Image 1 (cartoon, helix red, strand yellow):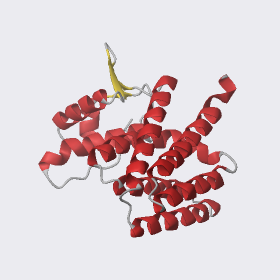
Image 2 (tube, rainbow, N blue to C red; image 1 turned 45 degrees about the vertical axis):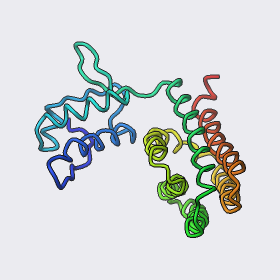
Image 3 (cartoon, rainbow, N blue to C red; image 1 turned 180 degrees about the horizontal axis):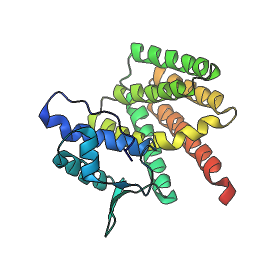
Length: 226
């Protein structure tokens, strides 16, 4: 049975490994490759019409991120996330996003503030029109603008890496009645803090916002088990 993978796109031979890694990583985080599913080098290589070497290298990178695990006599399988994994990732995201917002408050430009306002206004319209995925994508763009405004490449890298994990968790929170309105109000407080160039307020606004999202997810995903 073929894997649910996007077609490979690359312009140079040296980018094949990175392209394969991105394809496999996205497929895992989007749920197209499910926990426990085996990843067979030969089958992936045949499906993507490439040699097995870049597939092998990509799988090693996935192991480093703990997205796949090598099990004796079974091979490489998709790992999945435990509750402890999710809690750790959420705590890291809260800390890093708050830090990013705090730094951005000292550097943010007027055009970036206008973009944040525009995105926040459009998010609700898209949501009300039933375009949930588009609304989620715009929420990601909102946070990405702030992260870039901080002008901290290393911080951006770590947050971007975490964001891939987080996206697979937070989609659930959009199904909570009234949550989108809460998100937009939380975003407005972040924008206000950024506009006033107040690092402490920006830090606290981002911490509250991301922390609330994590809290909502946790209650919706596991409240029945508590």
